[in-house]
Length: 546
Ligand SMILES: Cc1cc2nc3c(=O)[nH]c(=O)nc-3n(C[C@H](O)[C@H](O)[C@H](O)COP(=O)(O)OP(=O)(O)OC[C@H]3O[C@@H](n4cnc5c(N)ncnc54)[C@H](O)[C@@H]3O)c2cc1C
Image (cartoon, rainbow, N blue to C red):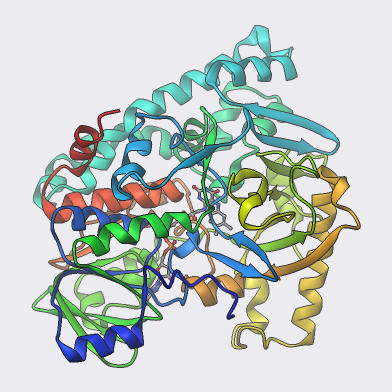
């Protein structure tokens, strides 16, 4: 635990914060619950508009899923492996990250082949650039060339690229305007989001292998094509069309560069600060009650702790009943949880010839639904594994961790498989649990060695995380990676937006917008737009010139 990264130069512990408050209480304009991409980005945007913001994070490391941890001279990130568009100067996402970090966050582009999909022993490359990817797919599937299914797929992606604005504008509209114009504004997105990814792809091709490859990145939204919304798939495919970037300095650099912006305006970011309840009087949020009973007040309260935590746990029964919040939450299902394998090797990534890309590793079966349906217990074949090498992606890694390689493998599974250990505590879950983690380690090592056999026999350290670890550290009740599952139904839920039925209470983060790091950040920007009643997207576009 003492080896975890504590960002202590930029953050404060709750104990120190409380002591300082006793000596002279500082009043804040806004309190933000949660320090993930959503929480920190809304706080930074508000800070740049002169607001004093207090960010409260329950974990002892700041950053939500962008946090990292260290063991024995190695460092691994948890929930940031690549982000699209940020590495290309002038894109909206590039500008948004530059804006909230005061130009301090830098991105290292991944290799031109930024993703590789492996089915059995056949590998498919995802090259950077729309035309390159199209040409590659036509090369892999020559029979499809004449029947234009690949062209139709890219046309659909182009169409989806144009439909978003109305859908997102509605999310920040005052309720009465949303009621009048909402259906009209959302209709273009719903045309795509109402259909499953598989449903749409089956409409353009019956080639199962092609469908398998086109959806090989489904782990990026955590739901196989027969269940996921095609809108989510298309947004993700477009997001990575020009490749991706990785933060120079690793995932924690996100929090390290954004927090100073919040602090410069007089704000604070406090860790080990668990919020128990949002205090609401006369349907207006006025403050928060901390786990130790302390009450902190502010005019604006933002929750970026996820919609299920916010509406399900942080509001009183009376408020929940007043706005039918439990019924609303019943419309959502949690996205999948994950197991992580974190591997340390005493040799540089350069020596080991490890690429700056990610691998999506499958059995030899291309039908993701079939693979997922067969995944019924701990012994069945893994339907998908993700592997990558943060030390190869980060240009500062060799300087900070000389001669060391960090590898990560992630698999998706439901948290319910771990129900038996639900009431045990971290690091004390018993022998059976540890044995099970070992079994998962073996399975994940097997996948890792399929794509990097040169690592065999070189492992110096490894550690396995389970959905219970995620629950413990992230506070997400099902250890879910992407908030509410990205099904067609999810995109029909009008309440997934920054504006809540409680006055002065706002939602930020991925549930208010869309899953992913950039979804979290844009959810934060959107939330600030709703709070300030000022178009912050336009401001970002204007203030960052290129
Ligand atoms: C294994 C994994 C790999 C991923 N890889 C990628 C990737 O490569 N690219 C990508 O774009 N996305 C990736 N994602 C998804 C991405 O990390 C998330 O979509 C995004 O970070 C969500 O941000 P958020 O701010 O909405 O939520 P979070 O980051 O979950 O932040 C919520 C915060 O709220 C805090 N909190 C909860 N309850 C309380 C409380 N009561 N009091 C105080 N604080 C509280 C939590 O501790 C947490 O820090 C990955 C996720 C995971 C788990």
